[in-house]
Length: 440
Ligand SMILES: Cc1cc2nc3c(=O)[nH]c(=O)nc-3n(C[C@H](O)[C@H](O)[C@H](O)COP(=O)(O)O)c2cc1C
Image: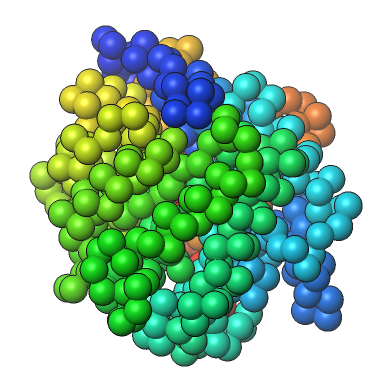
């Protein structure tokens, strides 16, 4: 495998140091497996209450990461309302779908995730207006502002603005129910997904929140729903259950969330007592999982400068930064400069699920290179989804304990050539670009 660099940083040990959360729980090191949507749960249009039950393939996938020595592992987005999915086949927790099988599979999921003592955290999400039209024609949102994108993602319907009563019954109560379910099935905590243009960020962003009641207008009003969800969850779970949040550091859109807004929002999260905030950026209208600024290229992390601006507001809330990290050197530098405390990893760990273990044991100093065009975000997403499907094919035992079993090496030019050929055929069929491409 070709890697970014083989230079091991002098102060590597900092990546192996612990983080203690407000709740008292401890992450054994600085690595965070970021949320990566898996789409490996059931989806049965004829029987919607059976939607979103995790499959054995999903368990196989987390067996690999569960042996990767992360301090914390987030699930991909787990949806709290079966009608407002990010994509068909998301895992879902909803009261109408309560059954033994769902509980059993979530318990298995938590168990395999914690094999080497990672904290297992469910990312709770609600897609709102980013629900594909094939799943729901009129999803909920803060207001009725429809999502229109120029990329070949699925089409999105005209959203309905939630009423005040629905904000409680369809959002707050559902997040609280899902958090309690996560606790009861053995997870250590939850993360609210309030980034990337999903429902909670539809409330925080002025581009999608046009309300004139007490959930719209001022910044205080726009984050009210999130703080109410936090309180509703805390009323349902023990004190040592972790509640974190993924938040945009910036939106890069005219009229969108600025870094100053994000800083103010994070100040309120700190005050509220969130255990951690994971900083990211962008929305479906303006994807940001690549470098948009020359100034941060050398330091790798896409949102580093924004994180540096926001960082001073955090005292007790732990901060993670996700997006762009590829080498141990850049990770160590980001922590030493105090831009962040933890390092979130997404695409590199679908190429190599045990990257943290290899870095901590000084076997490698960086992730494998990906020869996919990094400025084509949907292509890189597709690549990672394909690799996750490959990881899910065999249990660890069936794979002779090899966590790398069946994963395509995207640092290899001939593999990339074959993959791009498969992508061409996939796209010619008109498949949404973030659907799943099966690749051998
Ligand atoms: C295949 C794929 C699926 C993703 N799914 C989610 C998700 O479910 N929830 C989320 O918050 N972010 C999701 N993301 C974003 C990642 O968590 C992460 O923020 C992003 O990939 C940037 O990190 P990286 O440069 O290390 O990949 C996804 C990214 C990819 C590539």
